[in-house]
Length: 322
Image (tube, rainbow, N blue to C red; front, top):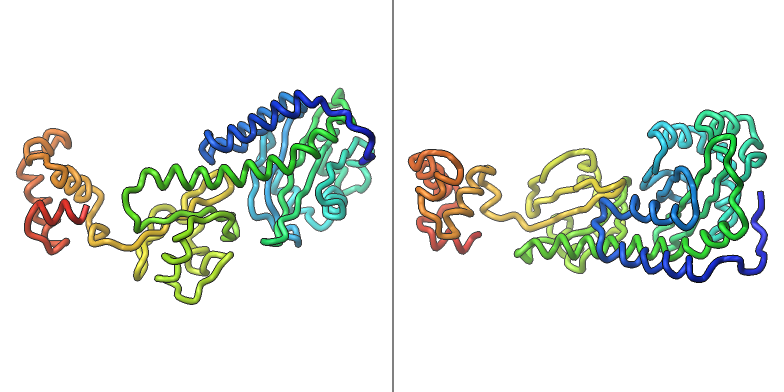
């Protein structure tokens, strides 16, 4: 293994072009595509076969995981030998430094030898960054597989070490851009958004997020989501609470957290909500019936149910609620 600090070997033009693309991706790509596209672009400047990108606590408990071109059992197996992971030991002792693990280093212990042989891993280049505010680490390991794989060079090690802080910054910026894009599609100031990891720890949030959360959980202060909300991490769809409607949407190992104040409209079924939106926008019974391929009488029956649930009596009140 080598982590020497030799003089600069990195091509400035390659580094500059890569960084420009990282920050462009942060602005333009949806969260669901960001990590994959970044790794594809990184592979153009620094060739590798597969990668693992994620976040973990200082005790190595995994918070976010994005395996790239490796089977899912790769992560499961690596987590299973968490206490005997020689790469993690080295990385935790050298935060911010890209470490080059060659074939001999990867076969230093019997447990790790069995792991890397199972997945045909011959070379690894890994970096770990500390986030002291949340006591989390962000890591990225690049792998080369197969008997003919070449060791990562010192120039490649330096390039990755230079890029890694920018990669972390671009990823964080992408979260904020995702929140802004999602917010742009909401016309209601009752909605606020945040990004959380698999353990319910917040990494980014809009300013009003805490205010809305405290309407439901007055003593909540973060950075962890409340216990009741963390219990919803594996559930699909919105959840009705006393004051809020909450929803956690999985995106590439993270969650987009949406919270909004409950509305009378939440009492409607999906079909009733759709008809209400059509009618409130000014469409007639016949127009709504034609667009939904139902009879006008069916539309009238739904509207009677809508008015009853919302305790309103005319289209003007419905339009105001919408």
